[in-house]
Length: 483
Ligand code: GLU
Image 1: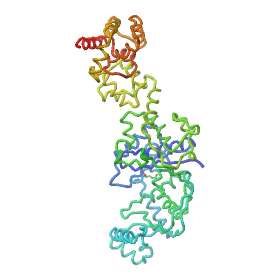
Image 2 (image 1 turned 180 degrees about the horizontal axis):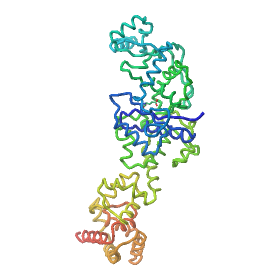
Image 3 (image 1 turned 135 degrees about the vertical axis):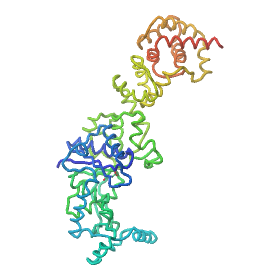
Image 4 (image 1 turned 45 degrees about the vertical axis):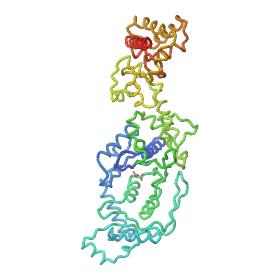
């Protein structure tokens, strides 16, 4: 059987990381099995679905490199791939079910249904539809239609036993028959419910495995009942563990607004390959326990049986570490092109070899490109001592004036300098003056950057250029003399 999986987002907002993780697992499964990855847009919620949100779905999939085999703009023979364009298909299956006596029209008003629910609540019962319209006579139906009473279509659910299915991740799952009522398939506005559209689409698109978030488990028995009513073989199901925060609570939109959408990570300068790697490990692990895995390694190592069923904890520190590893592995040309938009945002206008030296210095130090740009801006901007008292103390030490003057002489004669040359000059300064490196390096760092610690000094000198270094050393000397 060929593997066909789908990612079926609703275009109703930014993409939650839980959803994008679902997309990643589907994509990895498809790629690992030479299967097909389908993108289906579930836009039946007319009020909340927008074109703009649909574009966001394409944008984020594209950013992560999750290429779609079938979907809008990607071709495929089982389309359309957007639910609002499939209404005729749902209506056709609704008609078939009604004809087979597996579904019936319901004329109950929202008010009546609400009253039923209230009553059940008061009596402490599960709220299930009473079945009032099940056995309406043909005459009553005709009258209701004549009066243009809004009409929904409900499943004639005669299944009284438990609905059981075997989930690939969670094993056997069973739902008590008494909680499953004659639920609505088609709403009175002529649109399908999520469960109906989903079952019809998964079947007609020949989906082999439904891989989705655990929050959809309770929908699965309803979808199975629809399959049964139509006499169809259901697909396999795999429900992914929820993504939890460090307090083991579900990552909700409100409480973690900057952390729950994939776009937030893009804006902060996380690399797509690092995000793909990190999110793939949220609920799944590599057989060898490797953490840094390339796209190809993820694909070749992926299997559904290594997905855990307990909640996956989103650990921001681990993500930062991982992104840092990816940043450090970038060759200079890539580093430059990826950092550029972030540098522009921070108005860092360094160019040419100075930019390269700065990026190479910061590459070792940062977790994200936003952090890199902020640091770059502080090094490229005017000199500011982070602690004036400390600076005075540092510059006031014995022999510091000798060190700075010597360096000024050495650097002053050069038009530009490479990090290697800067390293040599610093070393020779100590040697020729008989001063310990312990004195040279920190004092020079304070003079040049105004900070007590930071990226590699050789690169900082090369980035700043000899002229600016001489000027900053002079300023430090003035401070010292000001004592
Ligand atoms: N549109 C649903 C969602 O975004 C899809 C659920 C499913 O995969 O069946 O949650």
